[in-house]
Image (cartoon, rainbow, N blue to C red):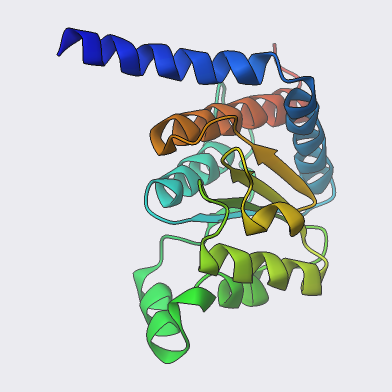
Length: 193
């Protein structure tokens, strides 16, 4: 059992080392951070969505923007589209599960906002539908996905592909990147070290 634990930790470290050495991915993280700063400076918001563990990550990142990350500061507008069970079940029942995020984007998003789509496979049908809605609405889209990017890689303005095929390692990297973006945004907007 101890070897299995060590193997999982080593695999997590290996994935993060690949990110650390991927100049293209690091540049994308920087670009997405700048886009979030731009959006917030201009009175826009972020919206996030995912399924399962990725839904939890969407909620986690939104909470960091709205509450705080490293220090007390003004709240930043961010909405996780995964949290309202009445809306989710109404859309799922009245339309289709594939539309649970796209309908919410139609209601809450506007040009200038940023939608952060999280899918380890890059093929979640409700995420794909949401990204298509973003294109139609002129909402900037960011994708967090696994190494091949799936269908979402061609639908996102920025697609951050984690160099792994292992779902837990991909999800661990997604929350790492989410934390980095939150920290950069907070520091740049509120100028604290």
